[in-house]
Amino acid sequence: MKKILILLLALATIQTMHTQQESAFTHGEWFKFRMSYSGFLKAGNATLTVKDEKLDDKQVYHVVGKGWTTGMIKWFFKVNDRYESYFDKKTIKPYKFIRNIDEGGHTKDIEITFDHNNNKAFVFDKKHNTNKVFETQPNIQDMVSTYYYLRNNIDVKKLKKGDEIRTNMFFDEENYGFKLQYLGEEVIDTEFGKVEALIFRPYVMAGRVFKEEESLTLWVSKDKNKVPLRIKADLAVGSLRADLEAFKGLKHPFKIIVKN
Image (cartoon, rainbow, N blue to C red; front, side):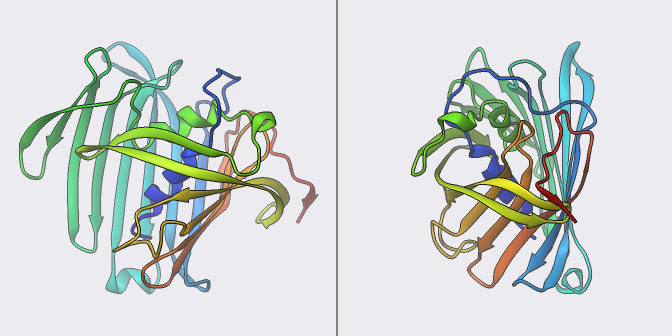
């Protein structure tokens, strides 16, 4: 549960071309995920919400991601995370990113403002009352906007088994690179019925959290929405799974082969 939003954003790296396509999402979209630990113990929930807003007279999407522990887990490791991103409705470039987390007493409260003209990120650490400036890669994304940016650029027809995909984002105080491999297709059982899915394996940093570099497996719906359906992670201790439990406000029809 501790890394739920990082796992969800790993899913965002699914893309092969940066050719603009019809938008995969719109105002009012909402996802809810059910988390389980080691296959049977409910660990918590996570949500992602998209809203239209204005930021400094700019028309933006404001996305809020939340993650929290539930049940027995919260009694020995309580998590309450909130991530926010304000990004341009056309280019999906982020203007502001907020990370406010409490993970077992480990807390962070960070606000990042992006200057895309000068490729800089201004990081305000509210907890320690510090301001820092960092160089960024051109067209950098934040942890949340990455997911929505790449959803709009997935070209399913051009995906080939074995393809490796890379992208960059800025997280906390550093530029962070994703790499993942496309594994193919599968029809999976979901809360809503059988759904066609694309499967990916992102490479993560082995060590304290993940068991090895290939610890994540991701499933995303093979339709215009590119909905995150399932995430599995082998952790240093145990395993974590996220399943889409509920949704609303999808821009396109959600394709179900056989309904439950």
